[in-house]
Length: 438
Image (cartoon, rainbow, N blue to C red; front, side):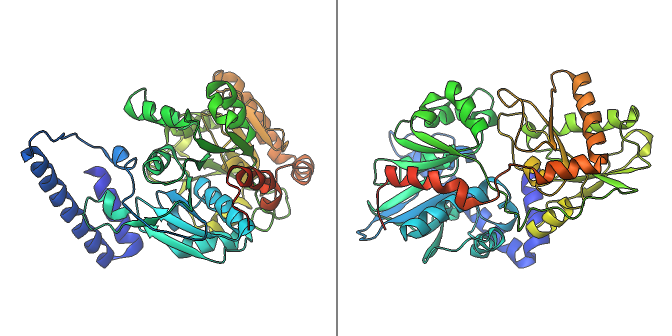
């Protein structure tokens, strides 16, 4: 009920009262039909009646109708492409699929399952990244299925529809939807880490071990982890490094300031981002004088951050909810030190976002992620030894104040800046897996 209330308030704030009424009606109707369906199933002799959580429904096939097509089409399946979901992995998946469509001159169809599609959000990301749009782009939403409304329209599918998964649950749905023997799946996290050892963890692991999937892995850090943790991915996949175009991620002139900005990437609802650990680190940095609060200001960005946070000495951070891409990029150019934690092998995007915008970054080691040598402004600390991590924090503060070293590190950074360059091998891999031609 708490989550439902949060979603309702967000809809009211961002989309208005009429949109809230519309979605509320759809939800109530969906729940009514769902209960009626369960009763009818129970009355049917021999029919199985099994409880289904939301994550199970996301693995169910998309309702389809078989058609004949002459031309190939790429079908990217994701939860949503709203403006609030386009930072990081969702944008990357769209970019990879877009580049593949451009290379082969085929249509891109974007399929959302947990929200209505927002075409303008997709076109906005292409504009920001300086990418062309495919000649033909279409959109389809399976949202009515998730609402159990019984009103979902079927998806027309032929054997010329190539599917592209963006999560293990979309991959599970594609396996039961497509008419081809294989499909692509972009992996941008160790998704088994999302769950305790239970049903969802098991289902996810089964998908990652499927040899009928062609995997596209985001970063060599994840790739190196999967070499031993899930060899099937590396046996049927390829990896790439994400790009951070200089047209969007760039520094202003790095200068000494009287008041410096520390940015904490705060995500209370995402355990792997170690929100509470980050608060402890900041509090200790203030207590020990590593952060002189006469010279520093603390900023936090993220959803559902408690508004009453106060550090030792009465220090209160400035808190923002999620920002638009443009505002986020402008904010990063004003940041001197970024604290961004990720308790998985993936480096995540905020450290790169910030480093490419001129900030010093402090993040953490995890498994094979022991250093990020692409830019010397990124420092990795060892969270298993808190004393050691605080020494890394002190090192990061000193580097942020060393304008000459910080500027040189920024200019000498080897973080990729061009999507065309980093995706060339990926497109070759995809063309080998699916030689559809131009």
